[in-house]
Length: 348
Ligand code: DAH
Image 1 (cartoon, rainbow, N blue to C red):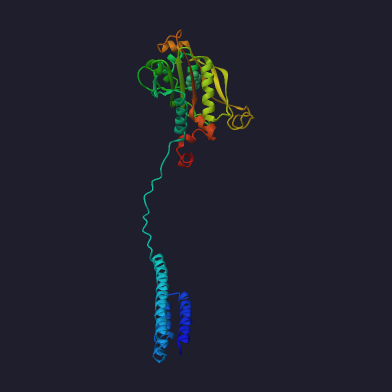
Image 2 (tube, rainbow, N blue to C red):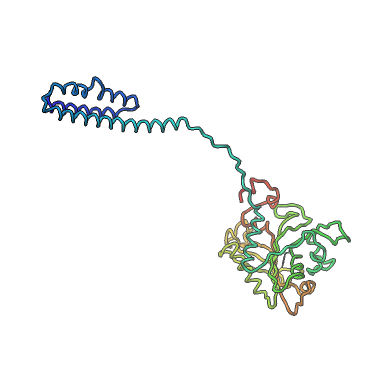
């Protein structure tokens, strides 16, 4: 052996040691490769053995080559060992992983009833127009529910209201309010001018349940009273409300009607939100959906509430909240709102 043979053998041994390490799949394979290329029966052991028989001039060269071989092998072994132990640790962790997640106590969050949502949206629309939200009692007296609203005793319009009376005080003097209109009177009695209020709330009628009528339902009332309020203000307000709530494409229409507490009175309809006037099932092919009533506050009503009809005027409007929701969301029958079946409620 001479120096060049020895270094060549070491170079080749290092190359195959690197190959063997690269294909070592386990730490045991690495140990085997280390033994094979660095152990007692390896090429490096042979060269180390042969060094004594070499020409003295060759010895330092081969000695240097041996040290380099040993360093290179050691670092290749260490690299491969590190890589394999990291991978092994990873897969062991994956195997040993314990899922300690607790079942938890998720509480499904509820939300507002659809009618309440509609009520709040309507309040928002009118609050944005400068209105305040007013309230009145559900158990009313005859004065606020009828008399002051220009329904004298025996007036035929009283019979149309299917009143539920409460057995309290003089007969037929205390009742479940049949509409939110009594809040008009209460607002005029207690508030300073100008009055701009909306009054949402529950109302009651002695009515048999059918697809569109329920003995308990909700209305929202509007009232504007000040000096110089005109029918044009009413029409403009309803138009503003309509496009705000239903969208710009929907318009409002007023047709002559009758209510004891307004003069003139009108029926308030919007162009069908589904067919936009073309005619469909929801609007019974008329292109219009009737929402409620409105009109200029009757002078008798202003007087009853303590205001002077020569000085002030006002307009009022009122419509049903369930009806609003039925139209907007296609809900029927009306009793769906009161069944409180979560399968219905959670859809909105
Ligand atoms: N209170 C009426 C009803 O329940 C609805 C109504 C009509 C309210 C005309 C109003 C109005 O304020 O001006 O049938």
